[in-house]
Image (cartoon, rainbow, N blue to C red):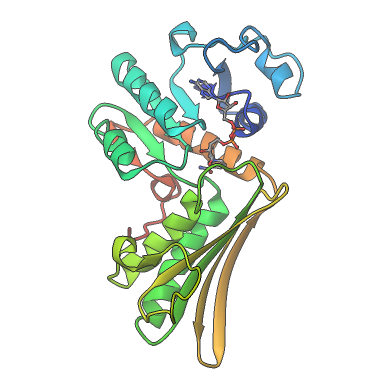
Length: 271
Ligand code: NAD
């Protein structure tokens, strides 16, 4: 039985994670953390999530969690997640990190904990998206540099704060790595005005923010006469939450290191 605490338990993903832990026979809800000073501190985390009383009160600092918590699942914000990694390193806890929107410097800081904390860090915890990454690798390798233009299109709800999504970037990275390209050089994140025709190697990104869209990603490989589109559509946050709980159970038995969902699922993808 893996003892899990959810950080950001009052958020969209946090509340869904309470449900997902409840449904997992091999995981137990051992805590929930809300923002420091939040009026929700002390509230029952089951009631916060709308699944009825669970007898676990939300706390507003990691120090107030029960000592026997093994894994923190954190879907919050970059600076919060990094502070929580320092706590995990100091207290021998493990971490599943779903937070997106980290800068290169923040990812480097996260990475510096790989020798001290067993962690799973993935911009998308859904099994379907992680299988899609494998399909993208296969497609990119098969199509190679044979004149297929590659574009990544993503759509999310109106509250999402980072763009393009971490998943869209990961998809772009997988395709770029499969083709010996890099997003730093070949990623095109904005086209406006007289920007001229596209180049052969660029990998373009387009972002939609609207309504309550949970998360949709399409990678298009288009050439003269045909187009291949590989699409994943999430219709419920439960898909991310179930993946995160699966990752928490898995990381509970791993040594220090930075892992991703490919490791959890046993799918190896370049990049
Ligand atoms: P949200 O704004 O609904 O929730 C974030 C929560 O974190 C809020 O409730 C906020 O109060 C809380 N928080 C902020 N600071 C905190 C602190 N110091 N301690 C405890 N809680 C704190 O956002 P969301 O839609 O749940 O998304 C959260 C993050 O997860 C985003 O980065 C999003 O992109 C990412 N996400 C990842 C996946 C994935 O599969 N990896 C899926 C969905 C969302």
